[in-house]
Image 1 (cartoon, rainbow, N blue to C red):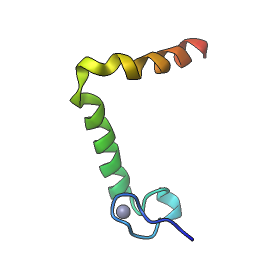
Image 2 (image 1 turned 135 degrees about the horizontal axis):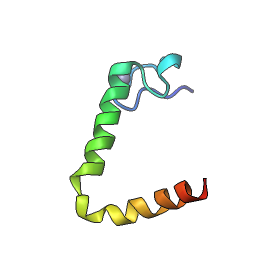
Image 3 (image 1 turned 90 degrees about the vertical axis):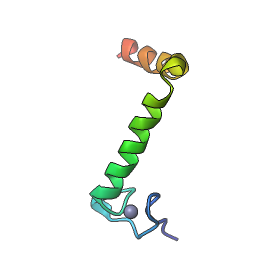
Image 4 (image 1 turned 180 degrees about the vertical axis):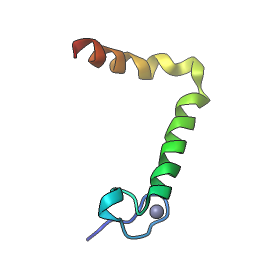
Amino acid sequence: MSTGCPICGKPVETAFRPFCSKRCADVDLQRWLSDRYVVPGSEDDDENPLSESIHKE
Ligand SMILES: [Zn+2]
């Protein structure tokens, strides 16, 4: 059973997994970025694990 594109539900194109096209990949990226910027005050919860892994290298 194959899963469809999480953005539009169309069959996934291997080159753009897990999306069906670059357009849908861009849409998902935009959602992800705007999600990060929407609550600047709560960044501590998300940033801590990230900066830890960066310091470990
Ligand atoms: Zn799509």
